[in-house]
Length: 331
Image (cartoon, rainbow, N blue to C red):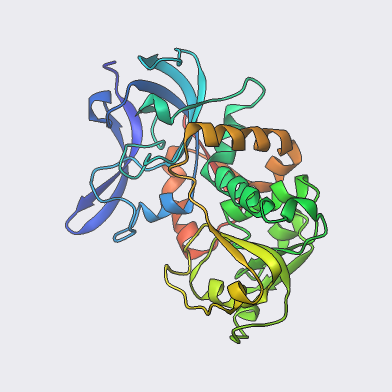
């Protein structure tokens, strides 16, 4: 394939990181046995980190960010994949160490690819993306310690206006859980109100009490924040409860005691959706497909943009002023 195509390129120049739309060719893409014409991508916090110096995401430049994308196969030699297949790619190193989805064409190893069910739109597949897979896995882990048996359980979602937080709220509500508390540092609650969250708590209020054991306030937690916020949450988890940890927006370090674990039997799961096998992702996709609704999508999509509009949105993510999922229409 000789034609050029447009992509968002992140480059290092004079000790600075520069993002620009450029014309590229297939021979400059990372190796893979399958070419995909990308139709949609979505912007994640990791994509925002990829656009800044010392973001801890990209180590080799130039690079095309975009850890999620959906589109149609235009060339492949991978067994079981065919030209014309509608596919989605989430994680695996895409947009980090392997050229990613902010591009009109992507070249990907076939084992990273999920074929999209015929009844699932490509836009919806990109909307779900890594955020949806992460949220679904976090919920699945909590169900293994009792969440699925208790529809009245008190559930805390941190970083609730972000992609993972928003998807977690929507998936939980679709499963019949309504006693959900959203933790946010944003002043406006309009977005969370639109998702139908019952209770909203500020980050400042959460951090007020630092005792090693506190009132048992939440049965289950999905934490996308880490850091000091995680420190404050652990002492508040109920006996036999659990927490799925899937983010570090507030930092990678936290301090705690053994008390929540040995006196209340709290279970903490680490969630990594990047390196999940295609088989594990297929199970999660089936769960998501069964629960996702048009109303959920309409409530969660913040806006739909083009390649040229990506960088301003990544700045909003880094500043903590962005809510929901932003979809990138590539083609």
